Image (cartoon, rainbow, N blue to C red; front, top):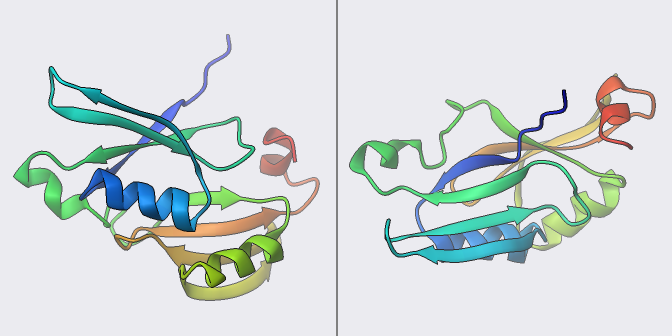
Length: 141
């Protein structure tokens, strides 16, 4: 059996401002942006450059009960983990693009990591896993 998680839905306030951040600041690729008239919504999918794994589905909050989750999908914990093949290159690029880091870079047993926030306040780890780490091996890095 072979299965994979294809998309993770990320609740956003506005499609275009979210695309602006994820594509413009993080450098993600816009894979799909299709209007779905039957539901009056857009299907917006982004992914890190060069990635072949899980993508982000930017899902606009469409009901009042979804609004509180914009920027707080993990209750203040780090929610998403962006692994890179060159931590310092990407750290400096993100900083120069105006991305806010809330925890400075740190060496851990699993690799180099810093925490940044997206435009809504969701926390992300930018990390470069050490060679030989089980997750790095699984990711093909």
